[in-house]
Amino acid sequence: MAVEVSVIATSSLGDRSYLASDGRVAVVVDPQRDIDRVLYLAGEKGVRITHVIETHVHNDYVSGGLELARVTGARYLVAAADEVGFDRVSVADGDVVPVSGGVRLRVVGTPGHTFHHLSYVLDEATDGGWEAVGVLTGGSLLFGTTGRTDLLGEEHAHELAHHQHASARRLADLLPNGAQVWPTHGFGSFCSASQADAPDSTIGREKAKNPVLRLAAEEFVAETLGGLDAYPAYYAHMGVANFAGPAPVDLTPVTRADAGELRERIAAGQWVVDLRHRKAYATSHLAGTVSLGLDGPMSTWLGWLIDWGTPITLLADTPEQVADAQRELVRIGIDRPAAHATGTPDQWTTEPGQLRELPMADFPALAAARAGNTPAGLPAPDVVLDVRMTNEWNTGHIEGAVHVPLPDLPTRLADLPAGTVWVHCGSGYRATAAASLLANTGREVVVLDDKFGRAEAAGLEIVAEA
Image 1: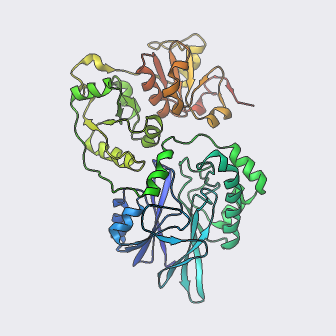
Image 2: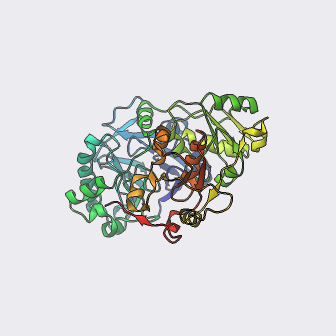
Image 3: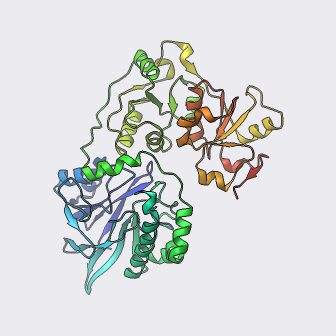
């Protein structure tokens, strides 16, 4: 194949961008805001970026498309129907965009994820004309699923779901079975109706596997809308930024905070986020901080939990980890943390009493405690708190548990029954974040740092919603 398509994955947000090239020039699709990754890849391959394209105005991240086009001099292709606050090359259904003598793009209107969503068929020249290599589908046809249709408001979800069904059928009818499918969403992004069922795919595979191509329209709409869960609150700010035209990013180091400043920021109610692994946090951490380790989707949960605009201070082992966190945060529009500190917890305070531990246990320990045999060193559970999302809870949960999804916890802390809380999620990441929030209000809390799939085997009764 003359055209090479490289994936630029952003696993923390569950998205993919793409660089498609013929060895000389390149097209970049749906770039994230930290464009240095794209520029490095293009340089590594020795290609010149001539076109930057957006499949849609994104709701889950701030785009780097405008800045990438400015830096490279590339043409910036955005749907003509989207009223944006910057200069772009307007494209619409049916347009053909020459990229080079051997590569072109065909624009296909695929509304559903948004009203003006576009997909781009990537063609390469052959002796007999043009052949479709694949299609860049953004939030339309994904691997085994589709982009969700409720991000523009519940009032549009039903109509957009019908559009999504028709758009997927159109792509399936338009392209050969061997054409590759290159979506932006589906790898953990809340922009996806459900998660991808494969690491790669073709039109032929989607015809065989994807519900949108196997179900009638009404059945697909009902199944899709019925399966949607909540999505991050910060999405409300992403579209606004992308329509206006995002500013360039500044990833230079932020101010270092000493122990006194950290104490003041915590006392002021600001968010001081500990980026270390949850086990390190549990061993010792600064009281008043929140655990959101870099080993998980830190930016998603932080952006969802905070009041937008609240100053954020980052704590980590190393400056490199702080830099990684800054990179993740600019992707969702949190441009400059207020401060940072690195090292160990005992360096972050001059008062040893400000250091705190967080007890951890597993599901066998919970089963034993419920049977009256609480393991030594742990307080007996008065409340079992499940902070997973509603769809996870409905599929199966521990009998007698209290359910508060993690995004709701900051505003529902007072709703929890009194007593010691043992908190769990699906693996321990969200549970540790929740436990830190609870401990900051004075609650006694134990983290179940365990996979939920082990709960039933440990002897806990699992029930499902009807």
